[in-house]
Image (cartoon, rainbow, N blue to C red; front, side, top):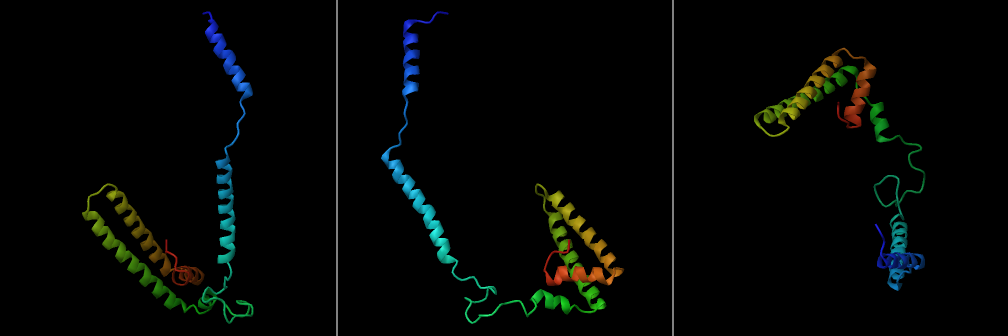
Length: 164
């Protein structure tokens, strides 16, 4: 393959152009850059204005509280933990809560078994597995120690977390 003079000329011109290419930004791009910088500064200015008052109690605007909060009084969670009822009451409340959840899951399983949709069998299987775990937990509560009962009671009734 031989290279013709026209092709040589094109390759020489392109090599000359690439060595002399200088990129300059138009004037409008600098204006756009200034606009972006002002938007970034605006974000900082807005956050400074909105963070004026953050009261520790999340109740009011911080009016009327000049001392330190939380140093002398206990939190609501600590007070609830201090006032945990007796072991028999804990067992009864936990049993009622678990049986109520089992009842609602069984109703959900009945409704899910009547519908035929994609993934219905999987969700029904998950519901039955959760019912089995709750029944096992219910049996375990009957012979559990007081420490375990207290931890479960705090988790369910004070912290309002799910059982499983």
